[in-house]
Length: 141
Image (cartoon, rainbow, N blue to C red; front, top):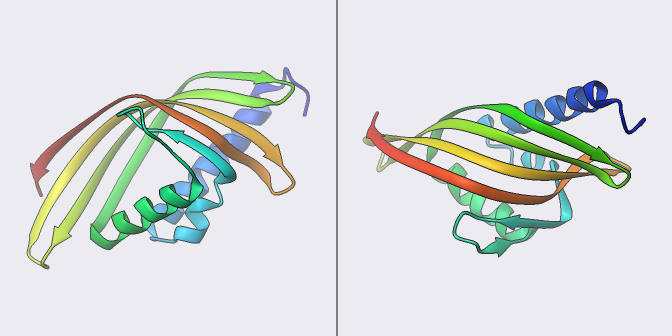
């Protein structure tokens, strides 16, 4: 990859995001987690940093209650260096959850995050995430 070829890299990252979005909607934990490198460092909005195993556990727990998920993002920046790439994304999502088969609610999420990508033999993977800010609103479905 030529370091200045941002459009080709952006297309590759877009494809990775698309696969992750489809895996999440299908509740395919294995498929979703392939986006992340084994040595993942994920800094949450509260400042706590978790790794790959904890993220997999958290996402698995989400799959137990999420009925439907719609998500999109806007890339605010993409920087490439010799060791990988860093993108800043503004993500919006709506998650509909169900409890006890009858009670539904929708969570609306707005998140801005910094994602550090590394190239591996399996392709681009996220090695580090820093959630810069996050707003979650709740409403009835």
